[in-house]
Every structure is written in structure tokens, then in C-alpha cells.
Image 1 (cartoon, rainbow, N blue to C red):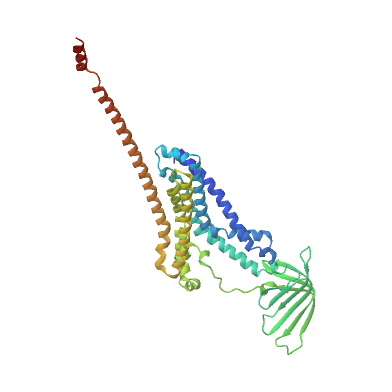
Image 2 (cartoon, rainbow, N blue to C red; image 1 turned 180 degrees about the horizontal axis):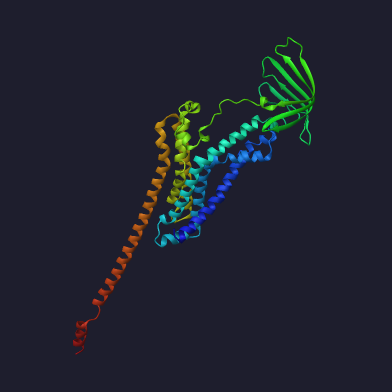
Length: 407
């Protein structure tokens, strides 16, 4: 890569980083607004809120990065044109491939990063996010810290506290458990303290009563008074059976070679197929967007209006291609015969853009050849006219005729 190539690469790379951070920030804000109830209603702290919203970003990186690259390339090419650098480059005899090469290198880097995120980063982040969600839903510590509200982690189980003191004690505690169809148990305590021993959560209640009533109520209820009472909170946590792993939460080999007895694969094999091929085809869009931008606005334009029209057309075709790819992904879920279409859209865009760049370079070469031939023809014609002018001027015969006339 020469000096000009490194210059274009730095310009496009810097713009890509800024645009990628901006788009990621916008997406993060949208995710944060959706998950704001983690702090307001679920009682989670700000750190958990930031972790959960940030872990959702890699899921969108496959869509964000190619779009950010497209905007960065368009910005770089328009800047080169605005500074008349493309005009000077074209006048010096360079083709659009001179500008395209460093941008294609940047596109390959983005494609590699997108591929890594698709196969490694996204499954890892989504699995970790699922663990946070499960922990949040099953963690009674996070559920009962909301004073004045009845909370039900699952059907038949309710918690309530009057307030929480500064030292962490739960004041005015009520637990009502009706999950057992044969008996209902209610715990009443003036205060309670949440403790953990060897990773197991316990609730130490002080000064209260335990009320047990048979279902149906044929016998009078049993009331037990206590000064201190310890309850194992694990038996109050919601019981989860099989944990469903979505296709996006699985690594490459889990999608390529799913287990035959996997219930999720048996239930939705089309989603597994579509996710597998989408991860392979998605990185091609980075290179396709670069080639498309260079094909339309990678050479000097005659007027500013023509340049804006070419920029709008390149953006519209890029958006249309990406929307077509998403539509093809839905078709692959239904039928495997549409799998080639997932690859045909970005690869076809790359090939068509390469042909457009090559034809533009050839047309400019032909125009330069015509100018060269015309200049050579004009020079030869001038020399011929000069020679003819000399041959029709006064010669020896004219001089002798003039001398005879004088005599």
C-alpha cells in the first residue's frame, strides 16, 4: 500500500471508528430504554443494568458494522472529491482501483471482525445475558427489596416487606406459600436478614409467627411463635426445567453439527439452518458496500448534483440489498432451497460493482487514448501544413522569372 493508499485508509478508518461508536451508542440507548424496568421495577442496581444492556450489543454488530463502514466510505470519497483530490488523481492517470484498494482492505478487516463476533462474541454475550436474566428472575434478594409491594416470583408464592433499613434488614416481612395443594403456609416476622452460607441463600427471621393451614380447611390452622427462624430460600426459587437455547445463542459447531436429540433443533430446524448461513453470508456485506460506494462515487464527477445523485443511489441500493438479505433469511427458515440466495445477494453486489469499476476505468483509458490520438493527429497536421507552406513559397524558378522580367 503506497502513500496515497495509507492516507485513504487512515481517513476511512478514523471515520469508521467514530461512526461505529455513534451508532453503537444510539443502539445502546434504545436497549437501555427497553430495559429500564430492571432498575425501576425489578430492583436491580445500575451495574447490572449496564452489564445487561451492553451484552446485547454484539447481537446487533452484524447489522451496525457494515452500515457504519458504508457511511465512512461515502464520507471519505466525498471528502476526497471536495478537496479535488479525486480530480487530481484522475488527471494523473490513476483509476478508481487506486482508491478502492485501501478501502477494500478496510472492508476485509471489518468482515473479519463481524465474522468473529458472529461466531464467538455474540453467542458468548447472549449466553451470559441469559444467565443474568435467570439469576435476576430467581434471586429473591432482588425481588423483595421493594418496600410496600407484593411480589410473586412464581404462581402461589408472594412476598411483601414494609420497608428496608439502612443496614439491610427487611422490616414487616410477609411470605405466603400456597404451592403445595395440601397446605398453605404464611410467615410473619418483625424483621428478617438475608444471609448466604456456602453459596446458599437463607432468610433469618426474628420475632414472628408461622401459620399453617390444611387445604381444604377441615382442621383449625396451626400457629407457631418463634424468636428466630431460618428459611432456606432455595425452595422458594422458581424451578426451571429445560433451558431453551435460541440459535443465536449457539456457537458455530453447535449450529453446524446439532445433536440429534436436541429438542430445540427438533422443534425449529429451519431457524438453525437460517442462523448458520446468515452468519457465513453476513460478513460479505462489508466488502459489498465498499465496492458499491466506489463504483458510484469513487471517481471525479462533473457536477455536484451528479455526485449527490450517485451517493443517494449507492445508499438506496445498499439498504435494498440488506433488506433483501433479511427477507432471504426468512425464506431459508421455511425452505432450504433459498440458501443460495443468502450468498448471491452480497456476492452478486460485489461482482456487479467490480464490473462497473472496471468499465469506468476502461472508458477513461479509451478517452485518454482518443485525446492522445487527436493530439498526435493535430501535431502531424500542423507540421504538414507548415511543410506545404514552405513548398509554395518563392523558389529559384520564381527568382529567375523575376530577374528575366527586369531585363
